Length: 449
Image 1 (cartoon, helix red, strand yellow):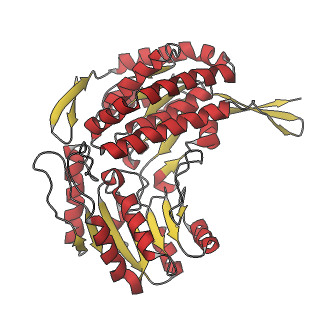
Image 2: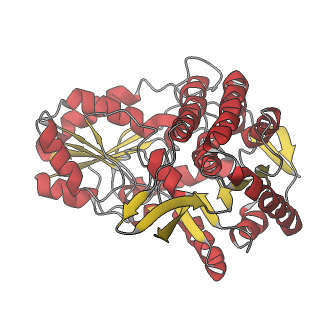
Image 3: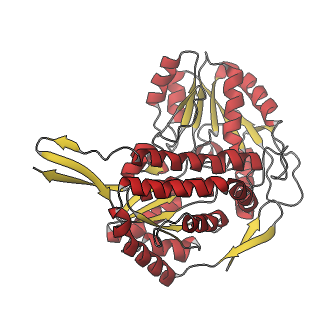
């Protein structure tokens, strides 16, 4: 059994049974047995099943939000709006895709079709436990696949509830199966299983390499959504106050445990100090505390290991010469808390500017000119997200096109759950969400006429 710890109280709130390789074999066998029948359903029939699941999730939304707060520490407001609200929107978008008739592409004398792959293995992290699951489950099921899912052992309770809701919604047995456990042996058994047709993984770059290596002997398709070290590029003509305020909010969302977080704020040399003052003023408003308290903006980190990892990065930042403009504030005596930190004058090659910290830590970096800003933004091994701010939107888009990353927000553009999501470089490959996410879970077939 694996105990689940509430990171705010450090108390055990539940337990799940770890699956061994034999349990993974049984889950894959059940998924493979169920897949032909599920794929044979019409698009309308699969849409009706997913609508039933959406209805069940919507009804259970308050319970899911409270469970996610308890298992990984997100403040209730974040749990309701983002941790649960976003996956509901993603599921709805897949239903919308199925509501449209199937189309085929014609190339010369060939008709091109997209068909289900078969059985999908999904391995998801603890930072957005329900969203990362639905981002894989919804398109996989919509396309006619079945899914075997291993959630993170840190925050698996929402996946257990999701499995109950899948059954209550009337989806066929074997369509979605959860296997709990650690990366080794449970995740390894799933990634290396010969009965899996696609392994979809979200997590660290290091773990992604392991997953890809385990899948390689079976020539299993792999989709990886990995780490990030995103740059928030503030151009000289931008609304500095707005850019800094939104940038701090983005960096600190979910206590900084977001792979797309804009953890590097790039500002012109001439206004660096002003940006630091604005960032410190914004950071002071992030109350750290009990995630069930409506006044809390920063809950605990998800585990003791993650807290210690973040504190280690902060210590290395100070040792490397960065200036802590804000940080070291009080935190509750119990729980895995880290006070928010703003580093100023950060060297773009420093560890805190290159490594994914996954905590409420912002690095503010000077740049000389636009070319220097683009160079710095592209100087990490990652390429998942980013932002550009300018009074000239067309110019901002031109700069965004120069950034080596999977998605860029212009002047705080809203997240779009129907747009493709994924990265380049060490942030992975493959796409989730929307039509591109649906296509990721399909095989292409050409029929010559």
